[in-house]
Length: 180
Image 1 (tube, rainbow, N blue to C red):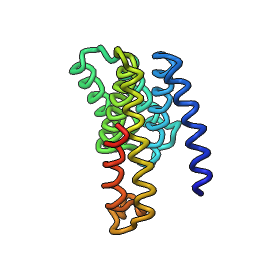
Image 2: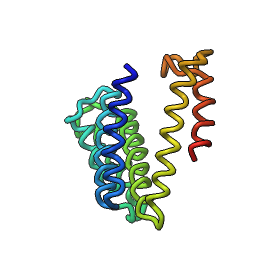
Image 3: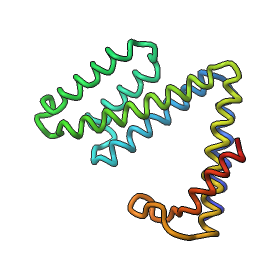
């Protein structure tokens, strides 16, 4: 299991760093693709198909946020909220208002997070800032995995992630600080 994780991480690292060093536009495209996959996963968690109306709407919201971030935010949010109110009517109550609201919140989270990651790369010294961000994440995950596996101890939140431990979470935070 560890061998597969290491091989997958190494391949992913090569692709990610290659795109990151390639330039701002390739990075933006990779981040956008990642947020679309995230939107599909989020919709699947809510019971929607990746090619269904709710998922397509999430892809549109994510895409608009990431590629046109300079719009007047208040107007855009109002338009998205209005569209969330319309979906239950258009789909004849096959989806509820709480479901459309949840999809919208997830799309906002993914879209604005992706836009921030793209914008960070476009800053002066953006490459260094993104590398700092990524190293912090990788150190958190790596140190948390190994420390949690070795130290064991009480579970952090078994209903959400059954194998994560408090010791792993603390060690991961320290690993991020050291990595940064």
